[in-house]
Amino acid sequence: EIACQFIDCKLTFEIKVNIGSDQEKALVKAIRAVFPNATHILCAKHMQDNIRDYLTNKIGVRISVRNSVIEKIFGDQGIVRCRDEYSYETTVVDTLSEVFEQHEVFKKYFYEHIYEKLYEYICVPNQRADGEYVSLWLNNECESLNNIVKLFIDWKPQQLLELIRKVGNITGIQMLDLRRAIYDGGNYRLVSSLRNKYRVQRTVWDNKSKDEEDALFAAFISRDTKSSKMLKASSCEFQIPKRPTVARKPGQRARVKAERTKKILKK
Image (cartoon, rainbow, N blue to C red; front, top):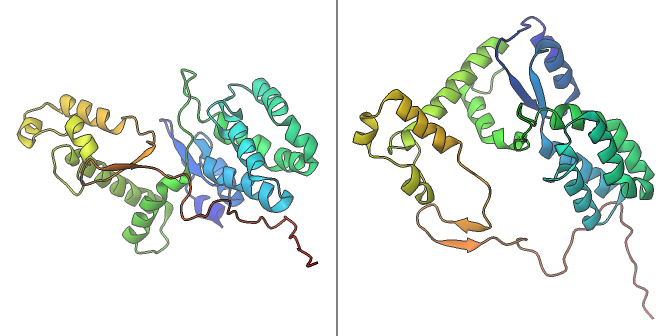
């Protein structure tokens, strides 16, 4: 159905275009057919969740094993950082050989459902031309904008070109509001942790050239956004340490579906 929606508007681009999605098969095929020159990126979070779900509910491995597998695949030094097919192939074997030996069914699942997609749609797209890596793309980061798009189109199906035009309008408005936040205009306000570094007076902003404004905005949107170990209040400088777990008793855990229950016999 999705491919049929795209079939009459095959598009080519002179500029580099990146398209992100989850692993929905019809969508993947449609993107490949209609946007053959675009770079297609899969959501790393969805793939992580699929692997974690398989290890949990199909095999029933311990949580420590699940976390170890995810880290070996998606961590900063994981399989996703391989630069070419040869290193990818050898790293998969070297990194996951122990898990494959213990769980033959996971080895089959990995090579049938993950192996090719992980390299083609995550490893390769996340390498820059200079060989450096960018952060793994997560579809979840688009959920708030997804809701805005649905409200903007009144939850009604759109022709593809019209949808692209409306999405362009929405993102343009969002970027303008982000830009205005630097001088306390628009619908956004800088949080206290950013105000000292990026905020400028409106009169100062008005006296800057277009290039100077663009440089200030570029510095703002390209800032380091790595998560802190502290939770910070948006209205003041108050902060507290993040808790590793929330509302969970010591030793409490969720029993996986594949795990056997234990019956305690009364003497």
